[in-house]
Amino acid sequence: MSNPPLWFNFLVTRTRASRRGLQKLSASCVVTALYISMSVAAEEIFQVGSITIVNPFSYETASTSTSSEIYLILNNSGENMDRLIGIETPIAMSAQVFSNQGDDGQMKVMQLKLTPKKEIVLAPGRRYIKLTDLEAPLQEGESFPLTMVFEKAGSLSVNVTIRKANTYDDETEKLGASSEDISDYSVVYVPVKSGKVNKHQQSISFTQNDRVLIRFVSDQRHELHIHGYNIVVDVEPMSHTSVYFDATATGRFPVEIHGSNDHHALFYIEVYPD
Image 1 (cartoon, rainbow, N blue to C red):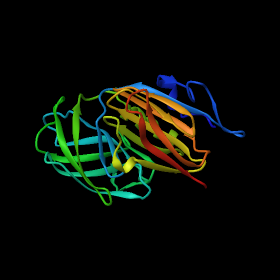
Image 2 (image 1 turned 90 degrees about the horizontal axis):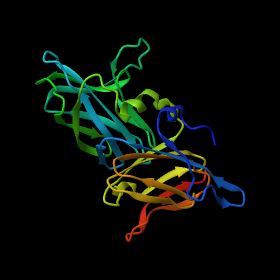
Image 3 (image 1 turned 45 degrees about the horizontal axis):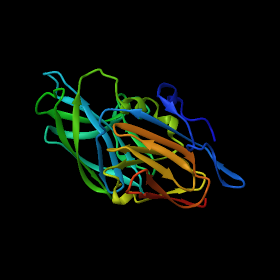
Image 4 (image 1 turned 180 degrees about the vertical axis):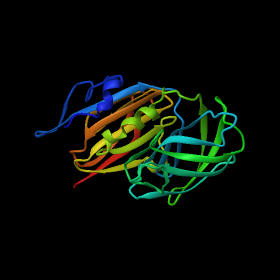
């Protein structure tokens, strides 16, 4: 297994495949996993269909400003491509995705496509949702609604928090600064609420030999066991836990919640032959 992303260097990391160490899947197959658990502020997670939106926020603006930007993370855990086809908010006349990916380095309006099992980071200086003709300045500590419409998943309303300007204290910005480090991973966000996942995430599929990254966010403490790969993950509330492994074994494997009277399969990982 190749080295993990470079941005591990500035996160608090913990490494283990399970509490018993590396486990054998067969006489010739050993799986190595690495996961990190990072304490964060309360995660804002929104889902519609297979689309997950994480931590949408904007910065406060000056009293004379008529525009602002929204930053967030999007993830498509499904099997099909989706597209963002509309954005609306009552606090601005227009909302559009801008990117600096043009050949001339200028920010341009772009169509946002959501590739299956990929993470899209809208971060300062790269890609963002631009609000124009604001009705009023944005003030720290307040929030506003934003509706995002996806071609296949449908409409989703999210709550955008307003933060103090010029701060660098959140996971969204850190990921935005180095998201290229996980470009070859199949990435899935799995929010766990009251011991359950979104109905669209009850089965999540990968292809054999995929490099897998699963990001868990939970409202409660859970011990999760990824069967077939013998990976044990401690997920804490107010925590963002990421699990990395290579999907070498094929089959349908339950991810179970352990350590409580309500011992059950949270969802299934399906790995199909390449």
